[in-house]
Image 1 (cartoon, rainbow, N blue to C red):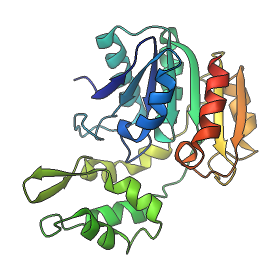
Image 2 (image 1 turned 45 degrees about the vertical axis):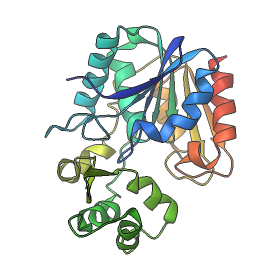
Image 3 (image 1 turned 60 degrees about the horizontal axis):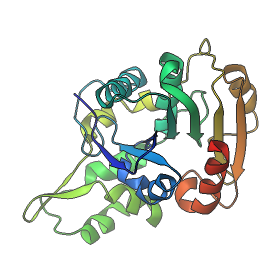
Length: 254
């Protein structure tokens, strides 16, 4: 099975992997800007997310393999790969396992270390939605607000809603499998993986996903890396400060 994607533009292939509970469409605005620089953007939905296939197996090894299958299917070589959060972990492992596919790697607000589970409230909130009784996104937002007070996070999550049939909402993501395997999201990139690939790490100045102490492990595993801090941004740095995000990635791409 091949991952679903939206492809924009022509030129050097530039693949983007979204984070946990996201989808490729989250990146459309930035992708359109990058496409004008001579890149062909591939906005990919990872397994159990967006419009891609559902499967009971969910870990970074199979997600990296999914991406290799995608590249083989589309005959992609010498690609740029950008991954955010969970997508960043997939991207790091992909770079370790399939280095011949890549020319440059961009990792947005995630380090190669282990992270404890911290999505409980969000997953419980999504599980609480009674979609058989909810008739609008507004109603879903009100119900979800009991678990997720941040309006920006709710708006991001509710992009997963779609009309499965007239008058009947559903979630695109495979919530049951994602809940059962949520511990996989925090798994570390194994320490024996070392890469010389040019790599840009980006972090938000208000995020705690990449802290100063992470630089040692990053430097041990990525011998040719740059770490840039995006101002006025948290974990969703590409949405919170898109101008700084775009300019730093464009400069790295040259």
